[in-house]
Length: 426
Image 1 (cartoon, rainbow, N blue to C red):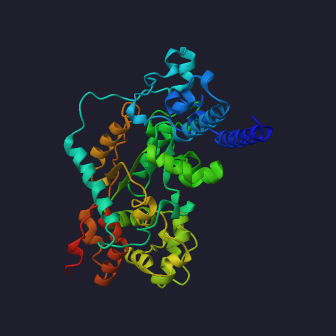
Image 2 (cartoon, helix red, strand yellow):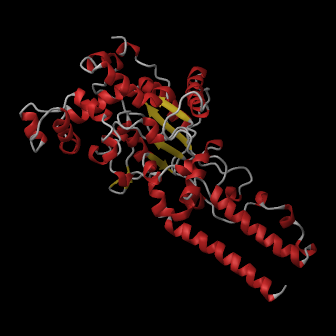
């Protein structure tokens, strides 16, 4: 083999391992958790080409070079793509033929997650399965039919989505889960679940076991949730490629809600309760523009003491004002759900609804096989319901109602919510 050929081979090998080292050391959770159940122990025999498995004594010099490069390629592919889908094998049990089958108990503790996935002997209710299939099919139909209904961003690709718009996709590498959270749709409790599953928060060195034990002030702390928009900082130019692999292999879910009821809930939570941040950022603007308060109180405490707060009608005017989003995008609490979770670009495995929260939560945790690890917390708060819509919209002019529906029409159609005809038959 000539010196120039050897030099080229070593340059290729060196470049490959430099890339791997960069990836490994950028991932602060360790390369063994880079992808769920991925072991970085060299190429699996089944992934190597037949040429690389021939008797070495019969290989000519060129075959050795080709086989060597094939081995390197197989190693890189295995590292990037991971092993079989995590839902296809029970946690704690190595796949058939895995060389780690004979490893010691100490070795197993290094690679096997501490908690095993739950195995159910009874099938999932066919009605629940059909409900999920119907919801997912509806999204697919709306997204694929270009002549049916169009809305901003419908036809773009995943690569077209700016990094900052991927900040609602929370990743749990331990269990192979991606959750797109939608504010005002039980996201507080689902974030609690994700913190417990990912073990991202410790108390005296021990991860929280009960979602309700997670301190309220930490639930929405962004440092506890690894989201897609953080990939660039950790993985650099590999970030989009890694996102796509995780989207392909992990179980992806979101929960949605009647769009108008969600708006009412957001208004009640942010403007009918004392919230200094939302008062200064949004309420003051509404009061000045739509309520003729030229000099509203400086603090929310003073405003509430004087009985001053934006009305629901002011809130609707703010949403419909074309200048609102020219200044800044909608806040996440009233931004359209499809803009938060991109259902036309991401093929979700589970679509839950707040209207069927208890059933859907039980169904989802069973699909994830973590219902022996966590239970979805029961909510006892005063939940906004659709029967209140007519009362809340009583003082909203008909033209505003129509404009508001057009603004949120994509959410109604994508997630199967009927147009509230009673609000338009005045």
